[in-house]
Image (cartoon, rainbow over all chains, first blue to last red; front, side, top):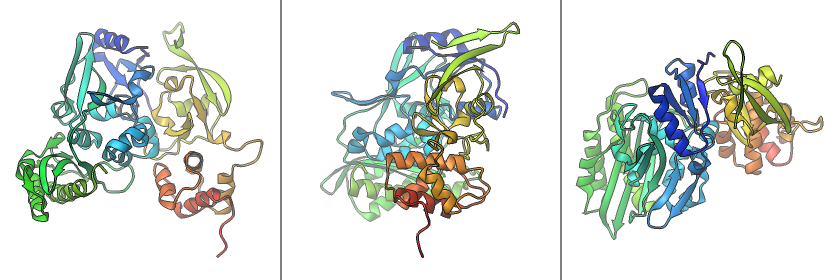
Length: 289
Length: 171
């Protein structure tokens, strides 16, 4: 299979990488896990003049808990590193499970959380659960850095607010009072399938009251989206099966899915309703599993 | 720092070292050379197969530092300094690995094209988890497509190898 030519760069530090991206401008593409970039280059969707490989930036491959900040995860963390992280399994098992369901073992060993976010694909599996967990991201460039909620990062299908010369450095999941979270995905087969619809939720339950809730939908709109009306319907209410079913209907109503080869808009909207209800129940009953 | 040489036509090549099946191999490759092709064409390790070349089928699976990856989605320059195991490195001292024996005895090899990748995925699984359940075996080889659809025998073969036997169970 044909691979176009390019100039290859291996910066040794984040600062060096930013300087290179600044200098090369729009000709440069960042190479992390490679599972999307190389795929696009082989099928002719991408032919960058320069590839800036992040393989030497080992600092961006760690997951740690920083007191006062939360769990900080480098952008180069692979899906399997998330899946096998003891820290994440203990705190938010929903995230390792989402990483595990997203692709085959081979791809999970190569692909990175940063790539999964930066690509901005509406069916990506990690952004919904990360947004449900209130994650923020740090973008760095040679001009400085900025931190924003992950939720504000996506613009449209494959469009994000990342500026030329900017790199996603890490993702932070803040310490929080949530009592449960989960990600439920429906794909056309068990392994390696894109989400026809994915629903991530996080809940804060006190007694039988749902104090707070976040519902995030994948493959249900041009970008990953919060189902805010459904959340409003639930906040501060007494938990019941009827209430969760109502929230599912509300989420389905505010979703904006499209028809595609994997499922019609109508089918997707129906799935949003069913999965939202189930995900809420699971997160309420089982905690962060 | 990666060393490179530019010839008089302006083509740049990189000198990379791969530790393949225990031996350090130094090769001169272009930046856009794919790992699968370098293993096959430069190092004559043709056991690694080319299938879809887009990371879907898993026939190009190799172990990178012990973990299965699709070598078709990896630039050879990215693998510089890393440890690679191909199917040629699985049999030790002329004796087949228990997984390979078991796959032969279970008739788990049909056309054989997916077999190298299957063996490597299974090998990585048994190294990390010596006694997997059937769902765990199926999950571990989910990134390796068999177009003969012979998964049942493959799964039985891997389970048998994990139980210390290579022959099919008596019925």
